Length: 172
Image (cartoon, rainbow, N blue to C red):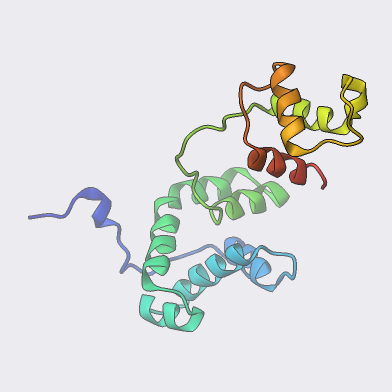
């Protein structure tokens, strides 16, 4: 009985990565500003190109074999896309396209509860003085700010912990 198509990915096959792509991966590994996850994934791909086994790569990089298999499979599944990049892109667009394969895949999950507009309004209200809303306060507490946001109809409900997350993220 043949395994399902998804399982037939030729992971035993030696990977061939064009020199331009190999150079991009080497640049990621050697750059002090590269993301650590990108650096590790680039090392996996280049080690595979060098003919190292999954077990050897996992040992060498101190990761589990499943991770090595995942990134090998991901690179194989995108071979056609990589070939297209090679043919139609150049320069920084080419580098970005190749590096995009090192990103995490989108994750499923519930959509956000608050729109970008609501978040902006929340932050704007937090920057106002409570006195402007005829409140006898010198500064906002999370509880008072939550009440004001509900009163203005900006949100139906919001927890103080979520409000705190928005306010902390607005400091940057």
